[in-house]
Amino acid sequence: MVKRTYYDPIHQGITLDESIPEEEMIISLIDSHPFQRLRRIKQLGPASLTFHGAESSRFSHSLGVFHIARRAFKKLLQINPNLIKFRGLLYASALLHDIGHGPLSHTSEGMFGLNHESWSRRIIKEHPEIYQCLNQLNNSLNVEVADLIAGEKVSCKLIKTLVSSQLDCDRLDYLIRDSQSSGTNYGNIDLERILSALTLSPDGDLAINPKGLLAVEHYLVVRNLMYRSIYNHRLNEVCNWILEKIVETARQLGPKKIWSDSCLSQWLWHPKEVNLGIFLANDDIRTMYHLLRWKENAPKPLQILCESFIDRKLLKAINIEDLEVEYQLEALAIARKLANGIGKEPNLCTGIRHNKFFGYHPYKSGLRLWDGENLKALEKESLLIERLISPSKATWLIHPKEISKALKIKLIDLRESR
Image (cartoon, rainbow, N blue to C red; front, side):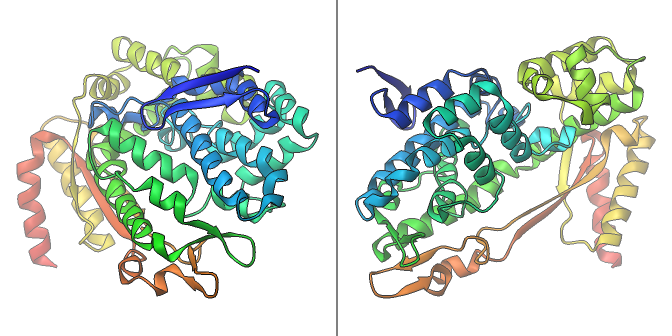
């Protein structure tokens, strides 16, 4: 009997036992090329420019999600032993849920216009190392896992809920992990209490025992705080805007004016032709190397943007969410005029970026309390959670540091003139 242990900063020892077929499968999946690539994908994208410790990888996170899913499943098996037939589906889906992330995780979706769920589905269905590992356990498992991750209907709703819902194993891991790596304390959820409160509703889906209500309330508040303080932090939004502008500028300049290797050339100028091999060949290392090269030798607009990101000469951002859309556009016009007045190219240093976050969505896999007699919607039993239904929104006006003082004065005048 062979065992393997991964020592994790959050969950301590994550031990896998080859004598258990589903865990033998997980070991093979971890050793595959597509999964090892996740070591080279940052969990929080460019957030390390704001929170310098935020260097953890999608590899670590994915292992953590599997570990939490396994713990939750063992708890629920005690209630319904018949769930054992879905163990392989849960383990594989939890581990592979992020297999299709591009460079810098979610940031690449805005940079390159890709969808990580779509790529996850494709990798799981088409990559030989992945589908052979899965189908050795069950000859249709790769299709079931791919469909679950893509949001399709699956044979067991509970498994889908554990992998993707408003209280899933993905969120439980990333809140704790991202909080620790970023050096903040907002993500300190009570994981033990939440896991102990998991139960099954009469329809077989996931529910919460009322004894866990406070822990779940705390978890939802924590998630709200993490989005406001880290994921949607103004400098993180600035970094994402710069990275998107870099790719946009590179595409506009074209392959005759800037250097690129064969892999990134496909990503930039022939994105619809990117195959599985070309997709998996791109990671943080390759993308960042191109930014370094472009900073040293590229047309001036691209050089300026790459220098801004690489050397952390970041732009500033002011929240103008309180302004109506027409006034937001007027504010952008003011910022562009001020930037032009100091000799800066407005297209490279001014812009608007919106973000919107729902702390809780009752109609999207809404959580339920089950005490053995009554099944109730979570928001009906908690005023705190009801308040989280309203979205948090921000509209960032991005601009150069040099015009901040003048811009703030102009914005005061704009607000007074409304």
